[in-house]
Image 1 (cartoon, rainbow, N blue to C red):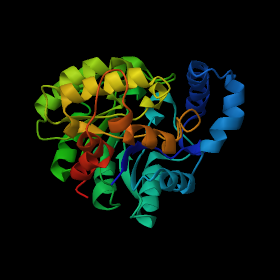
Image 2 (image 1 turned 180 degrees about the vertical axis):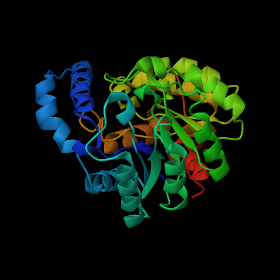
Image 3 (image 1 turned 30 degrees about the vertical axis):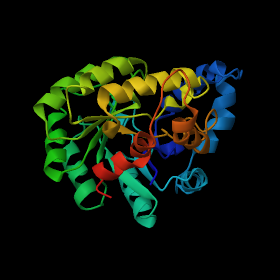
Length: 308
């Protein structure tokens, strides 16, 4: 089974305009790395609208083409930090839950709630107990540290409900703020909640060595490799980095993810799955991967965490 453990639905009215503008600026830098010249205006008006997918129709089609059996959709709550969207965060969570219910064989929904919201814990509990969502996504780039005590009631509720928490880690595009996203802020959380499953998204990207150093001594910390599509054009760098991540964390705590649809243009899901799936035969850089390691990363670990 292949599971995309980190994906999103993009809808214009679900996130403040400032985010879409920031995403366009960031995409210019991503495109430049692979030799494509573009302007923020080009990306904002032509590429980003193609990502909007209010019914998950595009997501499901891409997953089917890539051979992905199940996809975890993560709600992003940026409103407190960068300005509220046109659609409330409660409506967004309910929409994700309804879409997952409509496609139970394909989709799983995680709630997204900023801990600073009034009634955050109650909304999170409703998402799990009434709407059938399966975990919590936290995006501290909206303006809080993951070990701030304001977040602890959500961790306590997640532990009570026996669901995992996915936390964004790694530098983030403006208007969100990277200073809140360093993985060191997970250290207190992992220590104070040793029975809580915490997934550090993106292996903290540029801070990945910091992330795996923390994970090495905290067995309740997992990492996902979503967003690492950026490195696929540099296979030696990718292989050496992934080998170090596995050696430090263990292949049983690394999860596959695409962060879709953000990287659809430079590396669509079908290409990323093909690349990772082929690592036992095609690894470069003087490192090797076993079929068992890659099978665990592509789906076995997420299957265990999600109790599928």
